[in-house]
Image 1: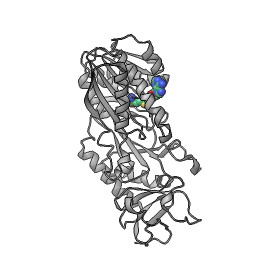
Image 2: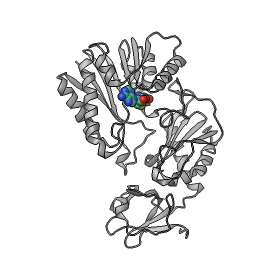
Image 3: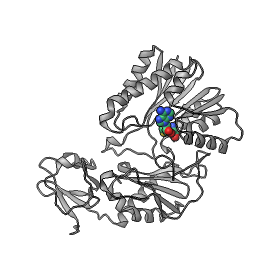
Image 4: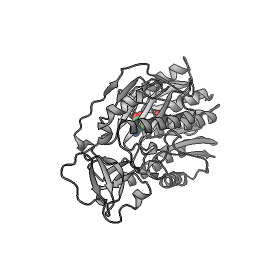
Length: 397
Ligand code: SAH
């Protein structure tokens, strides 16, 4: 099928190899000349130097010039989004994530759901949509309509939140706002625990659903332990460890707003629980000032230290420094949950940074678990870059 309104971009000779293996990105250097009348967010056909059509994608200016939406001969219309979103929902159902006691999950994880540039998180009746590409920005109304029409998904409100995720150069000036519906119940449930989600003012879509499985594992290690949840944000790890029977939980974040979100979420689940306290302070300052042996379970879940490849060296140094502080102070027999959510940092690099931290302090350290992102953040096998969350659970003698 050919739509005459859709322009065709041609690859340089030999540049089709990764696309023939379904990698969804076309880098600008792989293309021959560009038509002048092409705009950011346009649908484009991509073809080889010999004129063989590879598929259809969204064009944008930048190093990634095209994000492929399909490698087959299907039109990118409303029915396309309906099929992709239904498929995404089918997977989440199969994962058992849609239950009375769990209504917070990621419905669309970009390339991992064959919708590059799109993220959709669900909090009960509300979908929070983030576009990372101009093409998805232009498709936002279709996407919103299809979200509320998904059978038995119960989505009534669609909040569009792309002010910080769209490329700045695109001058799209997106406004964060409801496309459909309005503010409704903002308390979501994750594995039976309640969380107030502030998608209007919170980071990302308001909550980090990607730590769900890791929080569940943490709960199992919490009984009787003195827990330090560093970089607590909304207090996800704190609430799970309280449920797991922690002796005490200290939540730390440099943002006073995050600390009050944590306090509110603890109170939602445990009334007047004196085991919990929270501190608004810089992580390094807190770790420097705390006594040795004060904690026997420490969680380090910092923001991405490397947002870009150029920041990689500093990021690795940051991870090493942070983890070394924890190794120095954690009680004997302690457990450290340590994470990196930087896409630019590989699993091996992160492990090496943590290894260097351990070696620097001379503690006896063993790896108990190697953690990653949960199944509602699937990794398209043709797009290994989609793997971003890395974690280690360590036993420190
Ligand atoms: N662990 C959280 C997510 C952490 S997001 C969860 O499970 O939901 C990262 C958090 O680190 C943010 O809340 C941010 O305010 C905080 N932060 C950033 N820099 C910090 C610093 N230097 N010291 C302490 N907290 C910091």
